[in-house]
Length: 179
Picture 1 (tube, rainbow, N blue to C red):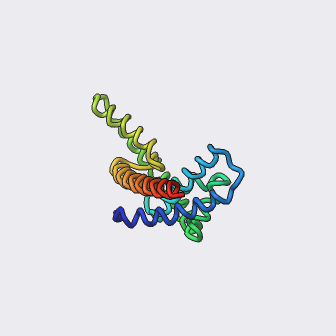
Picture 2 (cartoon, rainbow, N blue to C red):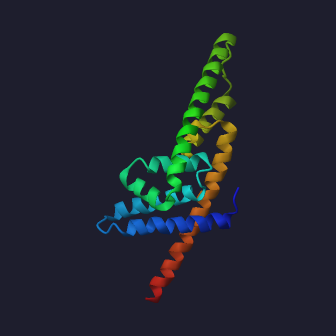
């Protein structure tokens, strides 16, 4: 994992690029501006990880599907976006195929052996794992161990994002008081 200070610096650089794009759209309502700032922060955070994690690739892929998000992704990532896009599509297809095959073999074995997980603990773990998969971008394609690793990386990145945004807000507030 990367050191938090270098992650914060990389996030800040990329987020400023996103805010510059957001600033060029003058006729925005408050809610549109809020969504654009959030989108630019998410893309900046994901691109600071250089697409090395599943959640960062999922965030970039989701953002690049709509018009405004694609503008942010292209501006923040530059030429890295095209190479990431090609490798991400290949990985996702392979992972889905492997996942489908493993589910089929597990289901066949369960039918043959009449094994059905009925304990309360297994049901609780499964339920909580599903919730965790829904919270982490791209988590629905991960197994248990990978999900834990991605969750740890995602939460540390979110923590860095919060720290940078707090610092940015404090600096802005101090500057506004001076005026």
